[in-house]
Image (cartoon, rainbow, N blue to C red; front, side, top):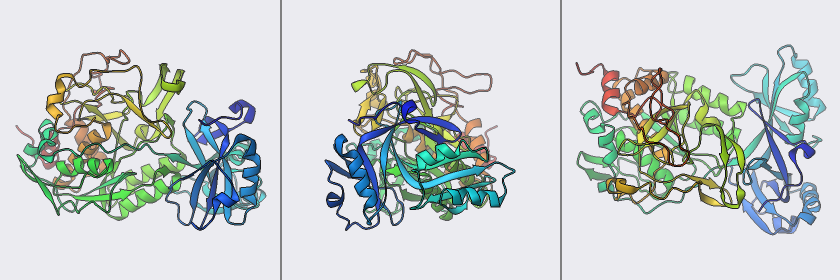
Length: 527
């Protein structure tokens, strides 16, 4: 297990993240190296105990994490930095409140200058620290992306912390790589029994008005897509009680999520965009730009970070905002994501105990920056019997819920893998298992998000002039107000009712309803 080298207060290690400060530990048994050619012999440069590639999607740069004996750490880091084939080498860090919340530095930082700082003064600050200005950051005044050079004295974490003390700078953030959660693919479900949720959201009735339009594109962005073995969705079909539905080979979990979206909107276009297993600011910007460039109206953010406290950086927040306001030919894309599967708040503090290896202990902050972004529609999960799915995370940021399989709360961590979230729940399936026994798999909130994405595509298909915000409003206005008065068996909470604004922390504005949403969008509401 990773071993920190002192407290964050002793080391002064603070990660700036969207005007939020996260305390870090520096690990003394591993380092990150970056290089250009796969021919580089890392074993010769840095003798280590373990080598792990970090797929990042950054062009012309390969990353490798190297585990070394703690007594050799300083010498190994020095040797890596001195070798001509190594672009840069840094320690690996971890979030102070998460044993496996690993953080990997890149060479980029974001600086936002105070309004009265002139271009000449900005240049002087950059020159003082030997920074190369790459570009202005769209959507933020006085803000630029910089790259460290060989002459920069400090690593990005130390540099941004120092710059944050400069009165000329209002924000200084390093661009970091964070691992994404990876879910093992279960046994492939029988497509004949997979479509019970279509009835639950009244999709067959909505199909009397539209099954979608090829001009409406759903983009699925996920780290575990199988693009090589994914046929074009219209190339194969599975027969259902409602006719043929496009079929994707469910070789990965990402493909399964994509299948759910196209199940709901079978005549829409499906765009699959593969993510690597590590996400940074630059990658998020590029993949969202790629989705927009290829005509996406709905963008399904089908990933979750492998950490529990993940505020967005300024670059990430602005990238999501741009997609929601400027994408889809200026009408704005609808961004959809899942609330998470740990049965924890999207933003809040839980007193944790009984975690394996004391991964989390005592008052623990949970924050999903993406799920709380105002431009993102966050979906929670309910079961086929209109109860809260026991694993579904929750909070004020939930917009809608969708019907998915039952299951138990889980969290994926980089070294532990999939961990059951305590206290243990053993009877979640109960009588519900007959409803979904053909699926033979636990549900997740990304399934609910995929259903919402499919309904959004149907809405756009009948009214392509709608803005993304208008589509979201239609989905929320027409949602079915399901109620769950039973208490949560894990946290002893009862949040399955609605406040004066019609919002529930468990279900958002209700369960998505395809028929009602399409009818409202088309002007064919029942009398």
